[in-house]
Length: 313
Image (cartoon, rainbow, N blue to C red; front, side, top):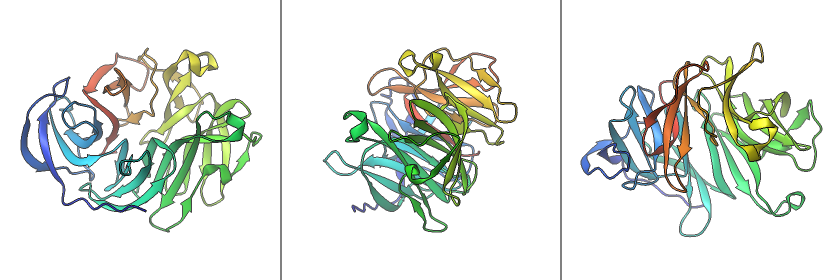
């Protein structure tokens, strides 16, 4: 296992132009602890891949970028997760961060990083990776999702080890896109027998239960009563995804005003707004926002960015 210690939390401030070519300014500390900021991964040409923050309400303005490079990043309650390359080879590691983005621990990850989340308490970290080599999948990508609890030291190497209630557990089962209720309960996507489900999970009981079909990459609202997710159009991912919100009480689905195909695990900007990344190419993306009730129109929130997390939630 490779352990890399970052010296301090030195950063530079960039005025957020859409092409990311603004000059660097004075050094500053990047604070990933609770507060009125959005954490994100920069896709600007200057500081590509760096983790930074912008002030709530001024997301298009000055940004603070750390020296930390990540493929995916997320934070809650003063603890962060960073999935990043591990040296010059095509290997990756999970990096545990403190509130100043200093590295606390690292773990090897076998696969290509895809999703990352932290429980509201900051105790439990979850990740999703792409892997190859599963015999049932003909050499194409499959997914693995796991967790680690820093309060108890317990790990879940793969959700595939859990018992499934409500669907047949077939050989092609996959899990991805974890979102937490608390340190013991979560939602995620499960694919089995050619169908994709929203599942609710119990870590202590080692079980998952199906909730609804055609729900991918769920994101639980701060109030805990709604799930934002990407819904395959016509049930076929080849047709793209529609950003949607599911009311967990009524099970009513609301299509949001974003009409573009959104291939991302959305995040909540408070209880009323969804934020998500929209790609402009292989390396370029922006974070957009749209009301969670289906009204309004999408608007650009953070240019040249992806992987957002609202640090006040």
